[in-house]
Length: 71
Image (tube, rainbow, N blue to C red):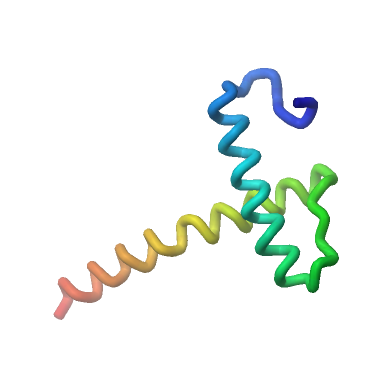
C-alpha cells in the first residue's frame, strides 16, 4: 500500500482507507460524480469530510443532551 505512511499500523491504515472511501462517496455525490479523490490533496479532503460526517451524530446527541438538561 504505497499511500500509507510507514509508521502506521495496519489497523490505522484500514481506518484511513475506510474514512477515505466514505469521504469520496459524499464528495462525489455533492459534486455530481466529478470528484475522484486520488491525489494527496483530494485524499485529505475526503478524510476531513468523512470525519465531519461520522462525528456529526455524536455532536448532535451531546448538543441535545445539553439542551434537554438546561430546561
